[in-house]
Image 1 (cartoon, rainbow, N blue to C red):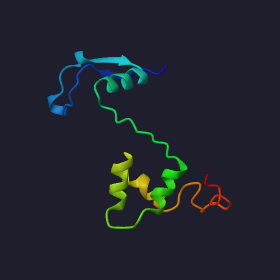
Image 2: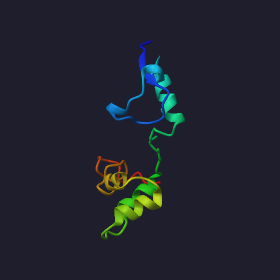
Image 3: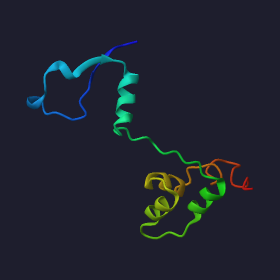
Length: 104
């Protein structure tokens, strides 16, 4: 496994403020990621699975200025996610042939 240079310091340093090499050590990428997660430095993507009825409700929601933001807050996802659904980028929207009638 490849070794990389890691730091024991939890701070970011400007080049002229860098402490001596005693805070550096060799480690793996896995150790680096575990250390970052332990210091709350990773943004872990949230995953959300929408039911077909949720996707259709978003798709058919009345259009008004700010609808994507409102829906994103309601469903706990990003505005970009809502925007994709509103543009018909999901199965059940009819964009793909034969999917519109498969609503249960």
